[in-house]
Image 1 (cartoon, rainbow, N blue to C red):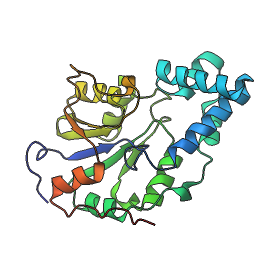
Image 2 (cartoon, helix red, strand yellow):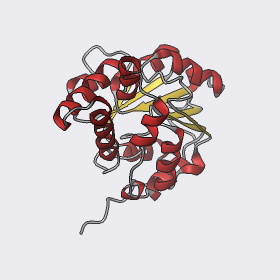
Image 3 (tube, rainbow, N blue to C red):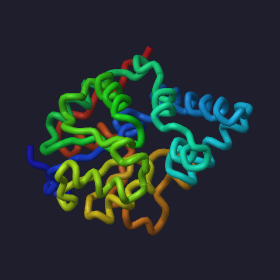
Length: 233
């Protein structure tokens, strides 16, 4: 299905995973955050409150808590990823509406995540959208260098043969869009009401488009009917 400007030239659709392909209100990523907090507390022998503060400080400083633990404390990233993603994926509701919207979207689809490929596969399967994604570029593929480090962005483009000028990157953390824009990609920030450092700031020219709901935005692009609201109790 042809798309209208300014997206008619897009041939590759790259999506962040957590809090992007599924809504932030879902009880999935909070499970991951809790597991990360437990890991920090256990590894550094900290009380929960102190572990939470360290977790957030490492995230802000290094892009992911895992990277911070690797750099500052020599943590094994594989051990960390296995622990952090040992969660109940059944709490994430399937999204047949998103499945239909992705089917109507022309071009290749790719997931780029600071998590693991195993985690991404489980999320895509639970959402019911696995069939649309031809590849996953994860934190291991990026040599454990998280977004927004520009080096793994270049590696992703190389590995998947992407022409950045005809690619788009959709992400919920605005700062992670900067290296994509520098490569020539179109960028989309999925806005949320997190702290200021996670949000687009005045003058952030690397944020080309801002949306509030992924499904509604995709429906507008493809002229598909908007997804039905979730059933109420």
